[in-house]
Image 1 (cartoon, rainbow, N blue to C red):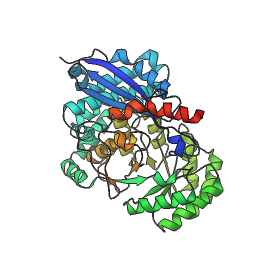
Image 2 (image 1 turned 60 degrees about the vertical axis):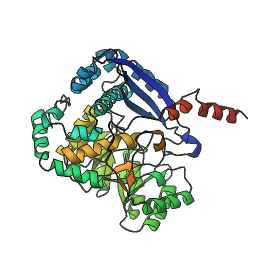
Image 3 (image 1 turned 180 degrees about the horizontal axis):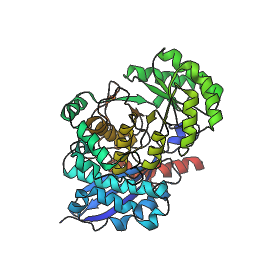
Image 4 (image 1 turned 120 degrees about the horizontal axis):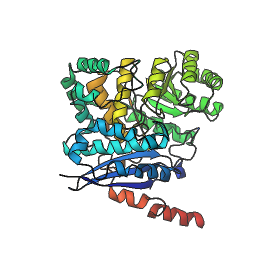
Length: 437
């Protein structure tokens, strides 16, 4: 009988602030980081997961994950992986830890990491990529994963079950189509605010040449700079080429409306996170004011309850779930079901450390077993840091290729982890010495 022997957590950080990779209006100098989880077993198996952060505070996230060790170490692996709905509910339901949220923030993200590591372990044991493991579950097994508390005013278990049963029709064919053609990607690689106009122009050309059919630019620091950068992008890419924008929560309602009026002549595809991720009413007000410009949000959506409110209030045109922000696979399944209920496309947030690797599984599962075929579904893509993962994403002609290897694609190379451990890994020691000179 194999058991969980250790919950190992590592503080892994990459000094991306040195080149302003990932820079935006709210986060000008991020160091892309991962609170990296290894769920080890007595028979030498392992499940992996991570929480993405941007530097300081990664140690806090690691501590929160470590606090969950008592819920998992010593558990029977067969029993745990067979009952991942119950496992998720037990972690979320720890009343003393729940008090720190409830169901949001650092502790909830920590729960998500442990839940995701358990799913990775199960997928590896069943020799399937996570998206396919989920897609091949029966509708009954899928709804058993979801906590419908706080959702039943818009989505009950029976309604979700009916939706999933309808989606059974054609599922096998959709899976084969996904394997053959993937899911379209859009790239944020050209759009970081810290880049020069020359670098922006070069990266836009490269994105188009690589087959991407949508790009995204960060906005929100200076309106004149944003107008100039949008003008450059529109001139280079031509009329009709989708250029999304992302303000990273920079504005109040009036500021958002006024700013977006200045960008409107360049026909942005959507405005992402125009205001606080918790302010459902502000998103709704902005959406009404700037229509037909679409409003997208969700990467820092705290939980399924905020997702429900955004959708029910008519506050969002595009929902952007995140693999490491909420309580793991189970809660993201709930969010996918909610989005399908309201017929809103899910375009997962990615980038960071490992987020492209993780979120692709949700988009493929959504396309196979929940929302089905949608022409308005994209997955965000950013070029950097994929080399640190054993099963990195594959982009072919502007589309994510379906993951084929077992697991959730979260496992990092050991030789990438060691030098990037903070603060004592070689990369950080070398930087400290260079800064001291």
